[in-house]
Image (cartoon, rainbow, N blue to C red; front, side):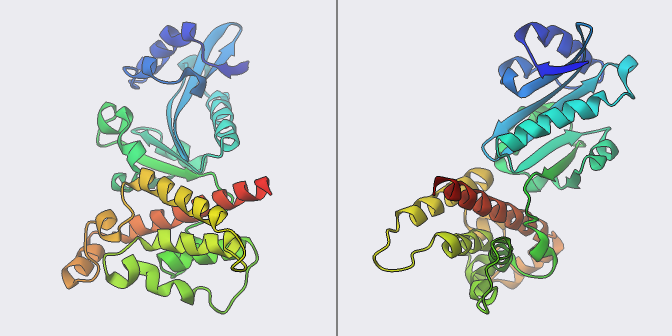
Length: 289
């Protein structure tokens, strides 16, 4: 058996395989065939998988293996080829929708998350918005080497968490961390300001890319901050805490909404993604040096 890229001449056969599992095929011809792989056994196509790429994230889709060839690890091999390619392209997160294979993907390292947490590029895909039923489970897997959510899970807030994760990654110790970021959390101290995950990310960038003296140029730092803000905005549609959460944390009503709707789930995702984006930017800058 070989795993290879999909060819245009394979589409009809691939559609038959996908349709046998009631998987969507309507949008297949409009996608980048370079992002699909097939399993081939003695010139017969027996499996397929694909991914839609959106800057730092990807939507895994169309994983299916001919029924008579199931149970031989073909699906896993297809997935491993896809994930290796995603890592090579520096993708930070993989998402997928499933109605029947949640347990299978959990074994591959995915976790189920609420659909309202999905980044905008994922929400705008035809798979998410129309082709897959609303009952489909949204799952996510981080491909980064850093657990950006770890400090948040341990009790720190958004800006504090991002700063701390990055500092630990680069062995930076200071009595000012995490306290220097506290007032940036909750949208700049509950003032409906900029998202704390983002401002914490900017502080974290400054740790590695900030100026050391007045004679140093600001350009490298400013360009890195601009990349972070641009990437974050593309993913979530805003940089403002109140807009991202849909409530004003400075009001009792907003705090009640935050608690009742468990909006900390969103903050956790924002925090993890911001930390990963910062580290990716820093690593790319280090390669230039």
